[in-house]
Image (cartoon, rainbow, N blue to C red; front, side, top):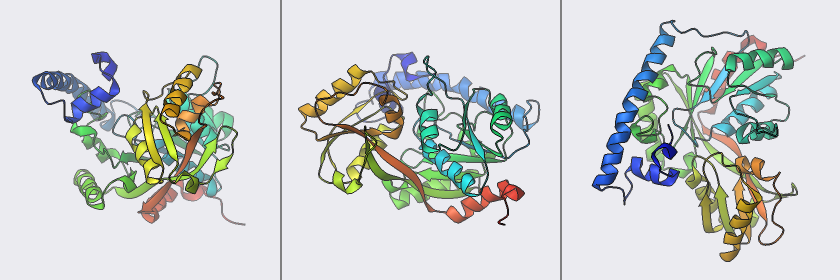
Length: 366
């Protein structure tokens, strides 16, 4: 189910389910009631499916190598992709070969879609296997790439492939998807799904007060007190231009910037740009996974120029879909903000949990 099914754009849909100001009348209440009605069978089907896996009536498939899954409970924008990159780098630092399993797709021209393309760019020594059938993808990764460890991207609800470790990314700025499953909220399954997980990584913790993070952790532990919980931030690294050059972050201070993106949480990107000291003169949000045309980029640049912006900035994920396009030659230059995930609390327990799963597979130093 998507907001488009109800004739709503994403912004209006989020305003409705979050009960933001301007959406409190009887029409909004009627729409929310309808969405809640639709969410009930969705929630019931999800619970039944999970119970069938729990009792063994639906089978899981083991593939003979450690499988670490990184997923989420909500749809859109939890910051999961930087966590996948962090994990792959950690596994490679241990001397193990790994592969990423993703259900992403390829474009008609055979190119990777945005998230797989970003993973391939950020982890050039890690094969990215694209297959909606994760069991078949796992077999391919082991057979063709001799993977010793499999990192399953966005696979928490994909139960057919057995995993040794389930890690959930939770966006601290909107942790529980307004408390309801789709389409009444953003939850892919009820919060009780946390009982299946082994660890939680809270993302974007720098954008939320410590007291709020403590309340989030308390709610998580109320559901599963055995979870390892780590805190993290999306740490900007540099600004990368179309030529591949890197501009130091301090050059953003007081610069007039226009920001645009097509991600699940566009507000988080805007906040990050502002926190770097840039003067944010305007923003534009496209749909998640939006594929840009040269006309789109020209329109963005024209809008930025009308606001006297000195730079047009987007995300790494969006940049993977922009580079093949013919960039406008006039007006403020386009660039992307490169980020890495940085764990700020709970890293020792979290990495120890991962290393236990890797077990005796880590090569001994000679």
